Image 1: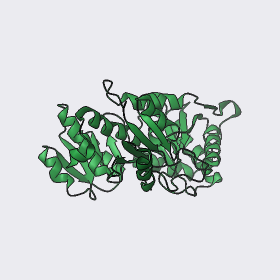
Image 2: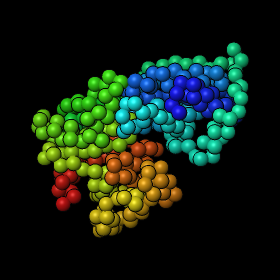
Image 3: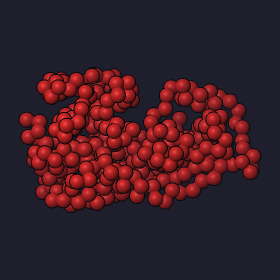
Image 4: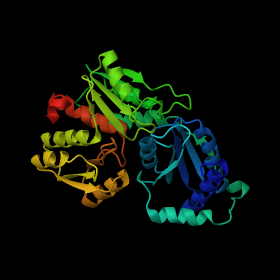
Length: 346
């Protein structure tokens, strides 16, 4: 249950698991814009501190931003308070390893076992400390920008950025603006209860309408924690994750890079397979879920995969799905080829 008392217990139990291998661990906690995030954040912070674990707080930041910062700052664990694309009344917890990757079942089993044990409170001198990581947003913005070709620019493009009133409401518009685009911010005014409500990747009609209203070249719609996207062009044509995966593969091949294969799921559009085969690229289908796509990519040593929902993985750019970075990879393909997405798919 996502209640204050359980979050306190969870933080304490995870902290005890961390201390088994590191006497003074540090965790990073980020969140999306749900009103319940304040309560859960405080409870987790107290739970970690009671186990002797130090805490860094980012405030609202995309899930992939927490994965990146956990790895970049050499921390023990990344924690995200988010229910992703779900409505505001829901919430949940995600964990990332020190490498910015999802944790294995064995680690989860150790946490579950710790939850069944009596608390072991740290001494007063051994309690954890907490502080705000003031430059978290700027660090993540620079990381996103670094995944876009240094020789390229988005100058001349008008882009609607719809953050679903979620975690990317400050970050996403800045990334595209700093790369040269004229940005129209949409769904970037969170109030704690409007996350995913009529905006973002789960309600793409809003970004389609905004693109047409502003005469924009493209629209990018993220979900509440910004790990997936939907993309629309000037004509109002919406592109799903399967189509965007094809565009990224084709761009890599055009640059002379080897792409031995890509990973989809059992629900990947059947048209994608022959299209990739025509490019000389194998498509392997994993079970539905980004976790299974990631497992298949890692097992094969490949970089590109994803789902039709817009959860895309670009493993030579990031360790987890990232809606902003995926959008940049697609726009990079457009800038390099000077061919519209619709024409690339025709």
